[in-house]
Image (cartoon, rainbow, N blue to C red):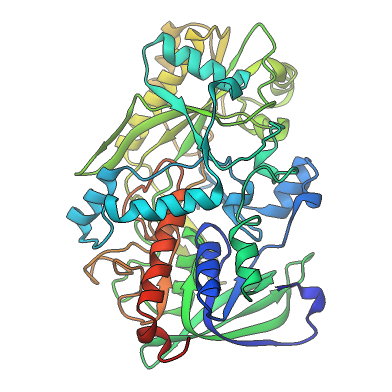
Length: 512
């Protein structure tokens, strides 16, 4: 049952075997697995429920309704998060990427992670892929924007491929970031959550969890607020008592809840070790019309400059074809006023390449006086260098595909017409607030590890110091888990659910 504020007339009190905070990639998996195993489940989701009829293809409506946009404390980086029932899978580009084997080996070697070998995880990836109905994008499905990336990369001899995706019978309308109006994207709203509901789970929407409390060394209660859907102000209190509590609120908010709760942070690392996988954009104008907004928005990638090894995991950068609607594209274009208007008038002739950079932990989440998250991030020199290299290579690819001019997302317009002008990138550098830098795949603030002194949760994602409290989302990653982390989070969540069910006497006593 999905419970909305309209049906709530006073304080909410629930008792359950499992309380899950968040309903995205991880929360939906845990909810389905635990409910189908016969346990009573309550899910608290701060966002609202949006389904096919709500997805009206209007940026201004969908961005406001389903996204939370935050900035770093120096305003230099924009963070995009889902804020809706079903989480990131409802609004992402539907790219399904497995974690490279070397990353799991590195986690075992450097962080003592147990029982997470590639062989062990393979079955969980298989399960998630089967539920999501993943398939490889065909070359014939590449739109003109992604074709530009492929053609330019191929002409330069760069390695690349099409993505695996969780789309079925896609009509290629291009509105993926605003919810699929055709239910082609196989989001958590079409598989995991319906299964959880059918098995008896209770899902509260517009329900914000504020604190997790412990008793006798075990997590036992979640307190929070039912929010007015329009004003987002508190309209009722909510309390859930449970035998197992799962934090799956995303990298920023899981850290926020732990810090506000003042539990599970004996290492002092809750909120620390933030990875943001910074992105920037490189755009180009072509003589012919591309209409890059039509078709699958993000279908091809160039991983020529992506590295993975068992010492540091993923490093370098990758280039991806990514184009979207006019409002979002305009935020990526250089300049303001008449210049920006002139460029956007040539929107149909634009191509866009995403530069995705693998970073090392350089940030943290702290709290302001109101208990709200403050995100700090200082880009490392190596990350700056990789981003500049990525922008250079993106420009080369675009020119190789026939671009007339290439534009970089600097505050001061940077437009070049020839590769000989690329030195402008080193001259400009990567300075705070000097160019567009965005993050979609935040990770690391509740790092897992074998040593309680250097991590927040153990190898099975249970708090080192508060029993029956699990953190299951991207925040547990010691390093970048993959280029797109939805599938990896789901596989890891399946593993954690399996662990809890296998050890049911430990967590639930003699029940079920």
